[in-house]
Length: 156
Length: 116
Image 1 (cartoon, rainbow over the protein chains, first blue to last red):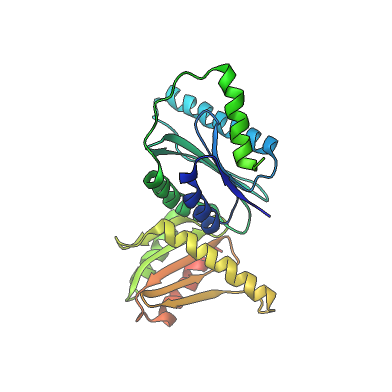
Image 2 (cartoon, chains in turn red, purple):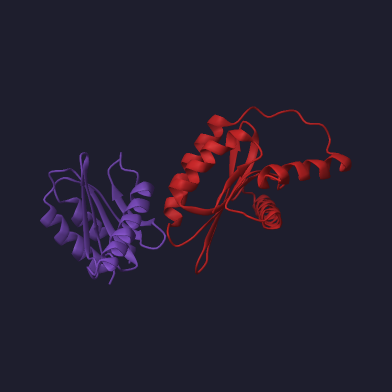
């Protein structure tokens, strides 16, 4: 059974609604650094971590290409496969810029995903708390925070 | 090709009560060409028309109904019509409840043939 788990509770309502409306199979809400805030559909931590790292990396590299071409950013990225499609898009929230990776199958379409993604972004913007000032990331804290996130996401 | 599509949509828009018409990529649910009144959201219409066509086709296949050619959905606010179901491009129309569905259907099937 697919589950939705969140690290930051404000993401849960909008994410559950988006998954149901868009019939998405997998969704990851993350920061541009690849830190996962919420997920749906992943059952293994290793899959989630690699998906978020790859999603963040794709956005970073396409953002860099955009910069070199004088574009502010490329916005949404969509790949169509034989069985699955992926939709990767940024969204600006009071919490800061987030990236949403959505994997969907033939039971839905990119058109529907886009329509409900717009609603998802609006709901995230409304639910998001203001950005908090954070200190520098220390190596000692990093592993602990990563483990805490994984524990929240997979209820370990 | 784009001119041909727009001509077909223009003919459709002349049917009284039609508020918008569009060609939709059946698999993606994205608009290909559209002629819509200001208050009609093309992105939403395309996504739902493709979804409706897919679900009705699935239901017809599951119940031995064969290939679906035309879908008519009547709601309180208007009518959604979809033609060309089963092909790569759908023709979708959103219209007032009192639209002459027979006439709209004829033009829609012609519009669907444009892309065949």
